[in-house]
Image (tube, one colour):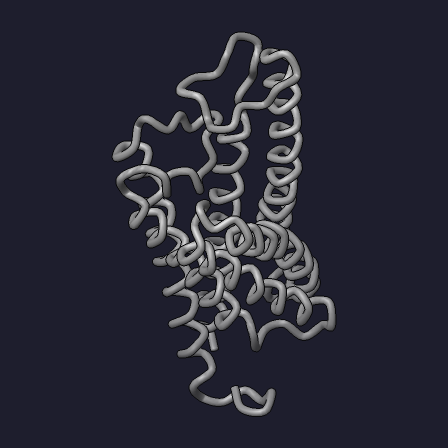
Length: 229
């Protein structure tokens, strides 16, 4: 695309972007899965994904976040020429912002409070907005009508997983305070005390999974449409 006009190279760029998005999202999921094996001391039910940085394989986590960010940016490239509405264009920029947050997390791990917090707000907050805006915008076109339902379902799952993360974190905090006489632990304990329900880790991982699933579906359909042109 040049100055907003399709060129003969546009489909090739879109296919390349879509392929990179799919590959990078797959790598991110594989790296996350590997951390469950490499660092079994972090209970996935209540330890956050970012906490793997405190183990011996923080570099694997950094690669995961970087791959996650690359997948999001590559998808923005694959979709850029196909989005026509104002809401869709806003969604594309939120997709870019989300990718910045995901990539920043590879540099600023959990030991960098400010940087990691900014990365989390951009990545976890930006992607659900992007996915919803783009699902609705693209779904209104004939070319994307077949992908509208799965995109919307996964986009909704993504923001629901964010809500679940907040809710489960609040629940665990309240239960921790009750179990410790109103005091919260300064550091993560080796195990949860009796009466404390840990689900926030699964909600955190659901965010990553639903994010990558949405990338898979959107990138695959974008690649198919680019191939038809």
